[in-house]
Image (cartoon, rainbow, N blue to C red; front, side, top):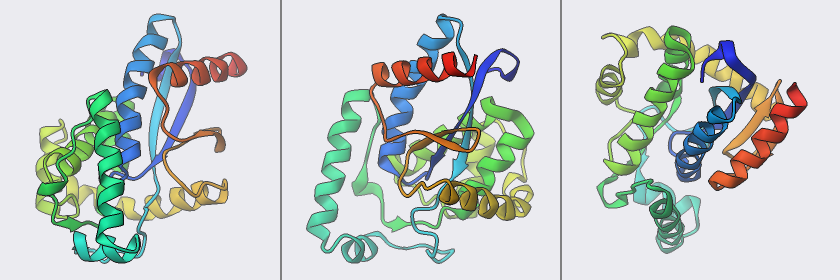
Length: 219
């Protein structure tokens, strides 16, 4: 994902608590490797979309929140089961039993923006990956600043990342407004030049097909 050899820049609107964004990333990573082998380089930028933009900074009890959001806890568990099954097929590990809270993702998105500013696509990729794994596979509260700081350092950022990320909250708000103005109401969604390219997680072949067509158009 080197910008100097990119056929085009792909923006991915996502939330780090979206299971289908996590699942899609697993397939997308494999697709990008296949495309790179074919000489198609794509510069990826993850852009914010908060599924719960009014979530309090401290988050909420997961069972209580999702029972209201989806009508009942049984409905929420059924949705979780579908994600677990889909994730198993692509190596996306879920441990919903380890999760106790639904976090606000504003601070996590701010950290992602800082990673992109400090290290481009590569560092942002590593931070986003660590956020997905921390939340879904380890049940970590990625709204907690101490958790975010550890994730950031482990992913290769210098200490004090969460503090440095605070000014990026304004950028998160601006980018999220851009995404919503583009007509996006669900994630993951994929954009080129601020316009929707396609929506929804794909399998590896699906990503390769869609992104190959986009690269040809960009050329």
